[in-house]
Structures are given as C-alpha cells and as structure tokens.
Length: 274
Length: 260
Image (tube, rainbow over all chains, first blue to last red; front, top):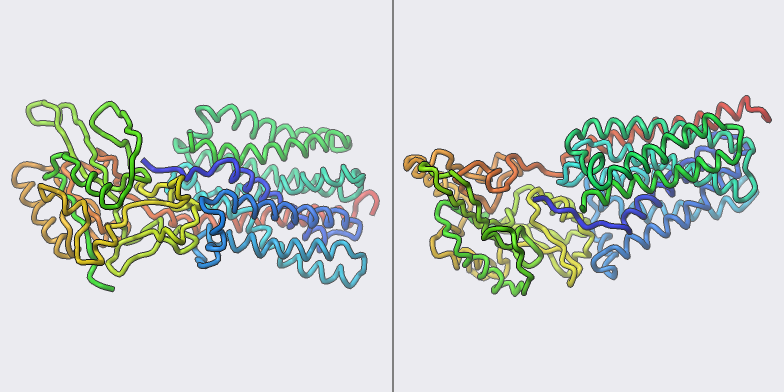
C-alpha cells in the first residue's frame, strides 16, 4: 500500500528538459575544452540551449508545487544526503553557470574564450548532476520499481547525454551548420551514449525483475518496447550507423532520440501512477 | 530531548468500533470524505489526507481453529519511525522531529513537493489538494504538549490503543505477548517495538496476531535513503564513462578528421 507522489506531466517535462540542459551543457563544455576551434559552433549551441531550458525547468518545478508561492522554502534547508534538497540548489547554481557561459559564448575574443572554458569545466559538473540526480531522486523512494535497481541515475545521465547531443545536432541543422566537422563528432558521441543507455536500460530491467512490471507489462508496455527501445534507441542507432553520410537520416535520428528521451521519462514516472 | 512518547496498539483487544477513527477526525477537524466501497467493512481503503487513524478489517477465511472465518482488527496509524523516510526526504525542513520523538509536518512551511509521499515505507503521508501540503497523523501534537494523550488513545474503549512513555509501553507489550502465547495465540508478535530493529523502532508500534503481511504491513520496511550512496556512485561512474566517450569523440576526430 505504498503511495506514488502524483508527479505527473510537469515532472515528466522537467526530467526531460533537465536531462537535455545538463547533457547539452556538458557536451558543449567538452567540445569547448577538448575539441578544436572549429567545434565552437557546437559549444555555443550547447550553452545557448541549456540556458532557456534550465529556466523552463525552474518554472516547471515551481508550478508543480502544492503551494508555488513557497518555493523559496527549498532554500531553508540544505541536506546533502537528500536528492530533492540538493537538486533544488543545483538547478539554481547550474542556471547561473548556463547564464555566464551563454553570455561569454557570444564574444569572439580569445581572452573571453579562455575564461569561458574554465567556467564551463566547473559548470559541467553541475550539468552532469542535473542530468542524473533526477534518477537518484526516484530511487530514493519506497517504491520498488523506482528504487530497487539503483541504476536510475546512471540511466538518466546516459539519456541526458544522448538527448542533449541530439538537441545540439538539431540546432546545428536548423542554423545551417550541419555536415561540418562538429556534426560528425556529435553523431559519434550520440551513438556512443545511446549504446551505453541501451546497456543500462537492459541492466535496469534485468535487475528489477518482477518490479519492472509497470514498464514491461500492462498499459505502458507498448510505449516502452515500441516507443523507447524500438523508435527511441534501436532505430536511431541503425539510422546513424547505416546512413552516417546522409544528413537527413542524421536529423531524423536526432529527432527520434529526443522522442525516446521523453518516452523514457514518461513511462518511468507515469506507469507507477496507474 | 524529553522521554520518548509512544502509542502501543494491541490488536488483540481491538473490537473494530472505530472510536479512534472518529475521535481523530473530530479532534483534528479532518472533514468529510466520500466513502469507499471495498467489498467489506474496510472504509477507507487506506490512509488519506483526512484519515489519519484507520481501522483495518482483515477477514481470514478458515482462520479459526474450527475452520470459521477469523476477524483480524487493527487500528493503523503513522508509525512515527525513529528513522523516518519522510523526514529525511523533506527538502524544506517542514517535517521535523519533536522533543517527544514524534514526527510532524509544519503546515506553514510545507510547499507541497510530495517527495515525502513516495518516501514513506508504509504509504501514510498523503497530499492534500485543498491546502497543497502533505498531511499525516500529528500524534495530536497540540494535545501532547498540553498534558493529554492522543485523541485516538483517549477514545479507545478497550485500551487497544495505549499512550505513554515508550520504554514503559515496550515492557508492557512484551509481557502481553507472553500472555497471549500462553493462551494459544502462537503467532502473536510485536511490530516495531525493537529500537534495534527496522527503522530504529517505531514510536507507534503494534502487537499483531499474525504475520505482518496479513495486516498489509511490510515484513522488513527499509529506509528509502538506503539507495542514495550506491545510486550516486553508479551515476558518477556513468558520468565518467559517458564524459570520456564524448571527450574522445571530439578529440580523435579533431586530430585526424577529413578536414583537419
């Protein structure tokens, strides 16, 4: 007779957009620090994408509260062992980093770029945190499906990476930067994170055993197998491997990865409310 | 901290009169709810935001030695765990422990994030749509701070619910189990009395006449926060593997790509 917390669509969106924000930021930071100067378009797209997304995350979190006007009460306490408390703080701190990085990415001066790279090395840690803590948050509950595998954080991180990278890919495509050197690198990184995501997802389902039933059986099963595993992971991987030279296939794959990332958060959060 | 207070619910004495359920509603002004048909006397099915004390009516076909239907009655309540999942989960500090060892939600601080709801191993805490806050048994915080026992214990006509200092009640309960065993109730057992046991012991503990699962209680409730370290370490591992992969993607191609 355990209770689910009635976290619904706003939290699904938050988990999804938070994953993209975190993933896009750390991808941008890595491209900025370890890539060539020609990867600057990737870095800029990542920084500029993470800023509005983390803003939207904050608004979603506040709107979902029972008493939204009391959202600052989250700042009354700091509990380092509590994902909800740490998360509230981290969204704020990460938001500052996305703002600073975005502003710095607009300048083309070399000294600004040096500062930006250093800032993003620290901000990156918060990006990783935002992408993964939502999974740890779920696994710190009394509900077996969310908690027993203890892989939810690791899985959400891999999904944050793949969706963040996919979102940057789409932005590059829309702004006419598709097909360059950064594009190929992004595709490579996206394939890599999707493979890890698939491995983690398999491990999660295997470890959960009967507790995975809300996901693998019942109402949500078609969405899980078809929407997430099929359309959201395997198909984009096939498209990317088979058609790595065809730009349209790369764009389609990126869109599918985003859909898959949303379906992942949707089935994990909503199947337990049923 | 003052001496820990507790409620001891001896289910062998419960007659299912629901005086506790009604007294709780009245004292705490919990208001009306639509009844739930569960196919038996059980109503409501579970704790709600307006039902903090709840008598469980458990029918055991063939449960009596002569093969008749056995009734197991139990007045259930928030356990006020010594290690409370809801309290650890609360990000605002609205959930706090009183000087008497009870666990309470400060309604003026709670902002309705609902993390405590999924963190309770017993499914006690409930979200209230009207106030936008989390609700549960307060151990009649106003009464115990004014020298009175909780309303449910006061109203109980059979002393199935007893209120007092925890150490006294545990001694009493231990004796009662011996007596019941002597009378032939071979499955009589305490639930949550042992402060070295699960969740550091429950400040509302029970004497059961059958195994806990018969009463829909978990045999070994665990603190949800037990997962935080392992899951965090695995997340960090995942971050390292993913981060390294992304880094190599940008590095390798940077050195020898087609247009390098």
